[in-house]
Structures are given as structure tokens and as C-alpha cells.
Length: 52
Image 1 (cartoon, rainbow, N blue to C red):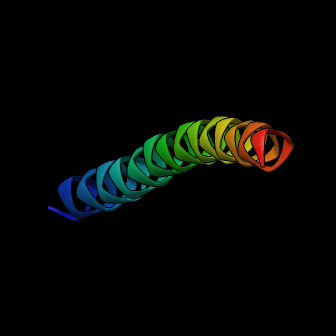
Image 2: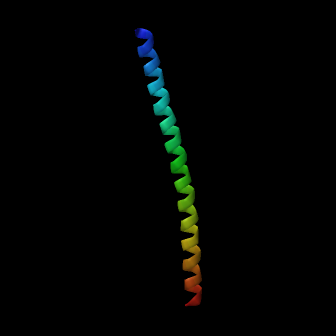
Image 3: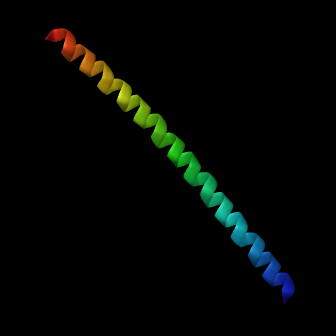
């Protein structure tokens, strides 16, 4: 019986670690997209300032 508990414990921790890795990758992707949007907004603001 103890073998099953150890296996379940290991599987649970692997699942948690996998979830955290996937979450970190998604957050990194969102940060990259946010940086791209910030750059586009900055360029658009500069263009508008030049037109005035």
C-alpha cells in the first residue's frame, strides 16, 4: 500500500511542476506580446507628435 502512496505523491508533484512550467511559458509569451504592443503604441505616438 505504501508504494501506491509514494507513486501518487510523485505523480502529484510532477503534475504541479509541469503546470508551473506551462504557466511560466504562457506568461513569457504574454510579456513578449505586451512589449510588441508597447512598441507599436510608442511608434504611433511619435508619428502623431510629428504630424502636429
